[in-house]
Image (tube, rainbow, N blue to C red):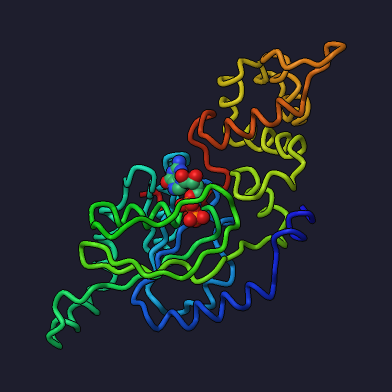
Length: 296
Ligand code: GDP
């Protein structure tokens, strides 16, 4: 994963973003931190916790439509144990938005009561939206804007695109601040880099797609042993711990992805597997599973 570090990790840039977030914190009452529900750990920014300190925060487990619902609930319990409100969100359809609005008012109820006492009833709650590139910030903001007639934030498919700071006035008594700069994940940890690459949060041009698909297949075979045999009609059930390359070859063969001499085109098979995982065709799967004491 050193390639990922070399291309995307800019410590100077990160320091600037940290400064900007610290400055902007004074302007808001609430942080909405978006993480990817399939990889809540790897998609959260490690330094955020230190920067935002006591500022109220709600974690949005976005892309929950592609995550395992059982695991998402476990993550919500786990955050609750740590004293943080977390909500499952699907920014594509808006599922979870009303729960977010409700939770925001709940988290800030003392602040709202204090405003009312001072004659500031109806003062909008100002929110800073934070999250690593490609986690769904623009989609979330567009959801907030939907119906408010306040225009549209730009949604980009390309990971790692810098944007300007922007405020958005939205209905229902909220104002949003877009991310103050690019908040990079913790790329120095190879597992983090790999999990981000599995979900498509890292530019594919810099990745070894075959190796990546092999490691994804191994992980999925451990976490969701039925998923690969079900999708690709390959029989893996009798053999546990098959190397990823072996699984990839079987998938390629089954799909008729052959090159001259009858060999499997594993490069093509790798791209297929990664595409299908990322678009949810393999099912709703969470790659980082929560361990919680709370079974509710
Ligand atoms: P940003 O870089 O954080 O602003 O992320 P974007 O809002 O541009 O989203 C990145 C990609 O993720 C886009 O292709 C979105 O359509 C997709 N996306 C965002 N939120 C969701 C979600 O909740 N579910 C699914 N399936 N896709 C999402």
